[in-house]
Length: 176
Ligand SMILES: [Zn+2]
Image 1 (spheres, rainbow, N blue to C red):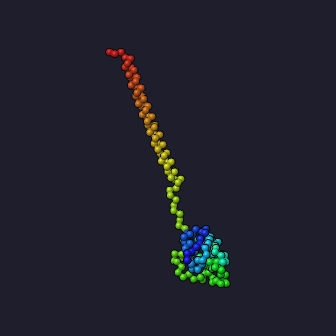
Image 2: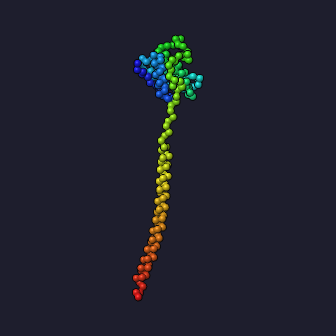
């Protein structure tokens, strides 16, 4: 039977792993008949997961341990809560830590965390700062070229004045 469920993940655990945990538990409990919703958040204590569920309902709230959640513990608690959804009360149930999990997937033994976010591509601020440094170097380079150009211009203007004076003097001198 096709599974219909959704999860609300308010923890740092990988949602894909939580989905697989929920899917496995729904199948194991034989609770495929209804669309279910499992909300994950944290428990305040760190001895084990806890949860609560609506009797004959379709919603479960799971509280996971923030530091490290044991997948088997989480599955046992989730199965306990799903049983409440299915209408079972505590007098009808075994303690959750004694629930057998035949065929529980090895890779769900410990819930894995969300993979770290890939390092943001070269930080935008850093990139713009790099561009500014390159542009400022160009400004310096061209200011220096401008100073050299002015120096050469003055030099050639001086020479032009010198030869103009010479030409003028030659024009006034008596021809011999
Ligand atoms: Zn209970």
